[in-house]
Structure formats: C-alpha cells, structure tokens
Image 1 (cartoon, rainbow over the protein chains, first blue to last red):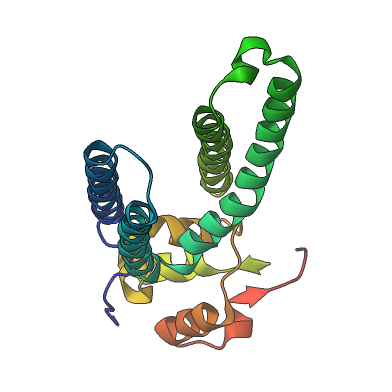
Image 2: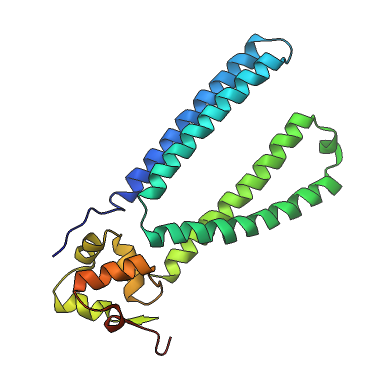
Length: 146
Length: 65
C-alpha cells in the first residue's frame, strides 16, 4: 500500500504551536509598545515608528507561522477554514455592526470616553464577534460532514 | 457526488486511518469523503484513483447526486 507522509499529522499540536508563536510575537510587540510608552512622556514620531516596526515584525512572524500551518492542512481542512472565514466572520461582522451602531446611539456617558478607549472597544467587538462566528462556522462545517 | 470509497477500502481491509495515510489527508477527511459530504478536488480524486488502481469514473459518479 502506498504510504505518503500525513499532511495533517498531530493537527492540535501544530495548531497549538502556531497559536503559541503568535502569542509570543504579540507579547514581544506589546512589551516593546509598553517600554516605549512607559519611558517617554509624550508621543513622538520615533516612538510611533518603533511600535509600528515591532508590531509589523510580530505580524510577520504570525503570518509566517500561519503559512507553515496552512500548508500542512489537507484540502478538506483548508476548505473548512475558508468557509468559516467567509460565513462565520461575515455573520460575526454583521453582529458587530449591530452592536457598534447601537452603542453609537445609546452609549451615553461612554460616548465621552477617550478616543483610545473607543478604538480598542470597537476593535474588540469586531474581532470578538468575528472569532466567535468563525469558530461556530468551522465546527458546523465539520459536524455536518461527520 | 457519489462514490464507492467505503466499499473499496473495505475490500482491502484498510482502516480509514490507513487510507488517510495513503492519501496524505486526515482520517476526518476520509470520513467526509466516504459519506459523500465532501467532494475531493481533481488532484485528490486522481490520487484516490492511483491508490485504488482504478479509473476515476469507476470510483466517483454524479448519478443521483
């Protein structure tokens, strides 16, 4: 019997490795941002450039790890992720849109919050809703094909 | 799309894991293929045909699909 290398061997371990690399890269970038913020009284172009470079490097590492992981998935696993990305994230984005526009109208005192807080809250709502949608859609794709 | 993967595999006394190893895919993918709930790409369909040493059209058909 023809034996080929298994593309999806130890999928959870590989997924965990990608998440771990992404988390480490993110913490490193966050550390640089924290140091830059903590050691300067005012925002500067140099500080912003340093943070941008650290975050860009972190994103590059994360994308590299994701690419290695993606190439190790078989076609059905890739299809599940592509379907989940489209449908799960799109539905999640729709939910986020409802929440954001409702908050925009009814935020009250929160509407006076600093721009940084509003930016981070908006980003958290959008990415949170998209991640939940993605996870649900991914699980639904596989459950339908059990 | 219908297929005879489960029968062909059983004829050879292969487990789903055996077939998955031969095709370079996960066992879950083999299960999805066998239940007809996932249609393979052309490259995977050709690989399946090579593994079973049969023409593609004797493994897959669109009748009743």
